[in-house]
Amino acid sequence: MRSIFLFLIACCLFIQCKKEQSTPPNILFIFSDDHAIQSISAYGFKLNVTPNIDRIANEGVLFRHATVGNSICAPSRATILTGKHSHANGKRTNLDTFDVYQQTFPRILQEANYQTALIGKWHLKANPQGFDYWDILPGQGSYYNPDFISKDGKRRVTGYNTDLVTDLSLEWLTETRDQDKPFMLMCQYKAPHRVWAPGPDHLTDYDDVVLPEPYSLFDDYTGRSDFVKDNEMMIAKHLMEDYDLKIAGSTTPDALGRTFANPELKRMTTEQRADWDAAYDLKNNLYKELNLSDEELVRWKYQRYVKDYLRTVASVDDNIGRLLHYLDSTGLAENTLVVYSSDQGFYLGEHGWYDKRWMYEESLHTPLVMKWPEQIKPGLEIQKLVQNIDYAPTLLDAAGVQIPADMHGVSLLPLIKGSSQDWRTSIYYHYYEEGEHNVPRQEGVRTDRYKLISFYGYDTFELYDLDKDPQEMNNVANEAAYQEIRAKLEQELEKLKSQYGVETNQ
Ligand code: SGN
Ligand code: CA
Image (cartoon, rainbow, N blue to C red; front, side):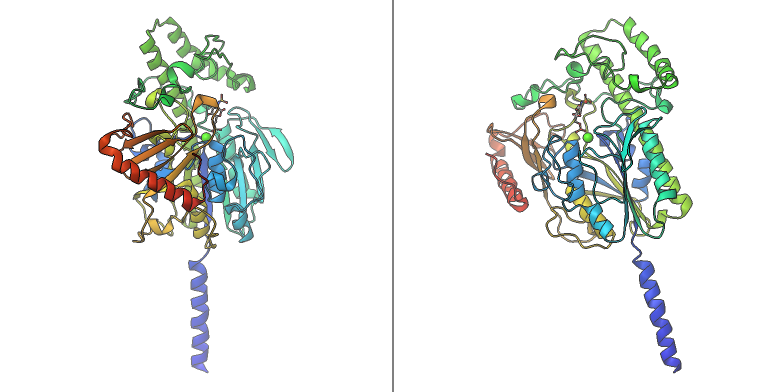
């Protein structure tokens, strides 16, 4: 009798212990729009300091080569939700319709007893599905006094976007969610997207410093296909004085004859506008007194553009600090997987550019850092090629939910846990949207060392040896010494297309 009793106690303890070990984690997915790794100090760049993003990396893992399959906003978001490349989830361009009723990881988590919520930028047109709660910015959203749309309709909220998206996220976490279930919250900022409007707390950051310039700020595009020189995303030519560079009232046209006004100014309250003018009038008056040569003007525009960009990043970092503080102070941090990422990278003056879209390194890469004290050892850095197709499988794996076989990505958890299993040695890329900024459609493959880009339909290839030419200034696609490598990369591209079920474009 006594032994049966002891056996039953042992069983109960075992079950209890099992239960504790397998308590599904909370998931806090923090996401921004157009955040370049060059502006995150954890990545080793010296432009700015991002203590809170760095903290996630230091207490967990940083992916050095996190990449996207299609470097543009809404398609990247669709890939993250579905774990599939654009051709398979149907969202190839910002203009395509995304079928919100298809399989997505939030819906799968919801079916697995998670409380799911989405707050901030969504950009997929139809109202979100698979979320118990959502409160989104319409379209691109605004920085100042943004509109939000929820199940109750549309409303305008006074304040600065990044602060508000965090306020609403914290409100959902503390007051609205069902505390008995694990949560998966997607907290998604507009920043640091164009028009790079800084918040009230950071209007004068960097006023007294001169930022370092990238190596290729004055790129003349020789050594590459003609498509590159035909781009319309140059700091020198395509930033508008009023719209982008914050010189209110300027009617100086850009190289395409455009003179738009900055849309944020007319949204501001009198008080917000006064703070803004106090910060910019001073800087603009100084600028107007200068008599700059063409080269000096590019340098000036670079400083103004990147400083504003970094000011918006500073608010993102501050607000990530607020979210981390909430997790710490409630004791939730230990079993919460925190992810920080962005929909793609961005050019901060490299090749003389702003924007993204190209398969070159700056816009192919995206930040990806994670922490989960219960499961991830601190201080890891992973060099392997990972991609935004992997996010959905990773989050499902973390939640202990089966990963659907039709997802293109794979869970990153084994990689994080040091499994010795084989990992992919190449990634597939495909950009489809020919429009704004005049970037041609392109697909390609990147390995640890090489990158092949095919401007399909135009029979034009570029090949970069990233070991020898990390800045991608010298296309070697037609050099004799690289023909064998090129042939192998062309084969690899075909292999990836067949693996993912991409129809041939040529
Ligand atoms: C807007 C921007 C572009 C940007 C696209 C796509 N112009 O159209 O510069 O490339 O969004 O960005 S703006 O004048 O409206 O700011 S994305 O993040 O949505 O893909
Ligand atoms: Ca974007």
